[in-house]
Amino acid sequence: GPRTLWAWGQYNRGGRGVGVWPSRRPHIGDFKMHTGSCRMNWKRGAYVTLAALATSAAIGLGSAVVGGAVIGDNAAAQAGTAAGAKAASFAIDLSHSSIVYKTTHMGVSNHWGRFNDFSGTYSFDPKNPAGASFDVTIKAESIDSGDKKRDGHLRTPDFFNAKEQATITFKGAGATAGSAGAFELKGDLTLLGKTKPITAKLVHIGEKDLGKMGYRSGVEATFTIKRSDFGMNYMVENGGIGDEVHITVSLEGVRQ
Image (tube, rainbow, N blue to C red; front, side):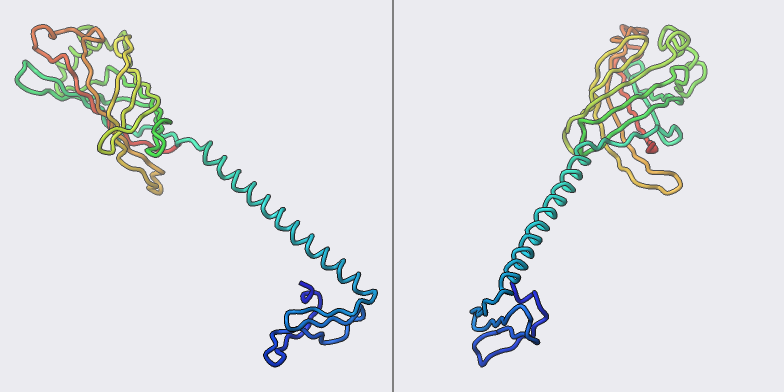
């Protein structure tokens, strides 16, 4: 209001309310304000006062509009950044990752083995599973069943044909929420030159900044295939080695 135009003192006039009295007589006119009313001596200075009030109001309104626009722009920018955010990419740390398999032997026991050499990247944010991405390449020659003679046989055309089919690959894109906090990851597995769609159960183990070791993430996927679907038929019919192979892929990655 107009009381902000000069440095005037406030006073209480016998319970009539708070008023304003000029500490000095301004040259533009006498201005008294008390008991909630305003009395002005309309001299030529009154027009100056009204102009000042109008200017003050305009400045205040302009500030509100500009301030609102700035806040709106900032909010829009932040929303756009959040909407365009993508999950970080992690490079597989081989020394802290494992790919293991399990199948039956002669129908009486389970046999376990592993692959020792693989690489790749993945992206997974449990808050945005649809943006998941996995690209893993396994060197078939790195199969390790715990027995060198058997490993030699597994590398032959009876099984992995490692000389001609040197790699096994998995490429996955997009996951959906499953049960018990897990997710379903769909992708393509290529083995012995044949590509088949698979669905894996995916669990996000955790992630955090480990200082000098970098920001790390851990995930684990499990799925089952029939090796005969890929043309690996050796000892399937006689039940010597199971057709179903259960695979666990446990990955730890460093954020790129």
